[in-house]
Image 1 (tube, rainbow, N blue to C red):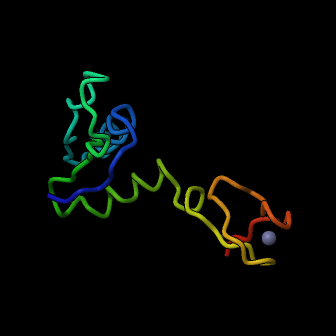
Image 2: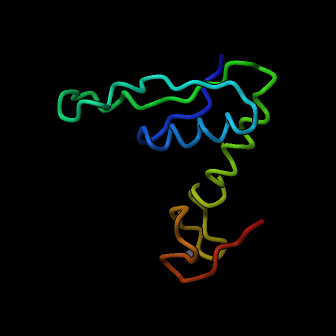
Amino acid sequence: MKKLYIAGDIIEAQLLNSLLKAQGISSLIKNEGLQSGVGELPFVEMWPEVWIIEPKDWFSATCVLKSLKPPDTFEDWICGRCSVPNPGTFETCWSCRASRMID
Ligand SMILES: [Zn+2]
């Protein structure tokens, strides 16, 4: 088994899990029940985790994950003009207003 993704909440974990199932990939969610009692659990590090059971499914699973969360959209990027780092959600540089370069 291999951990594919740590979700921000259980909804996200279940969405990814259902997409994997739709592709015929065997997966499971760990820590699924731990957020049921809101306020009872002070440990924020217990996020839901999506695990892939069969190693042969790993590549397909990463493709499903990328379709759900395109890395180009969410990773920080460095401005090509002024070299400041920008959050992945920004389409233009916050510093110099240059458009984001996709290389
Ligand atoms: Zn810039």
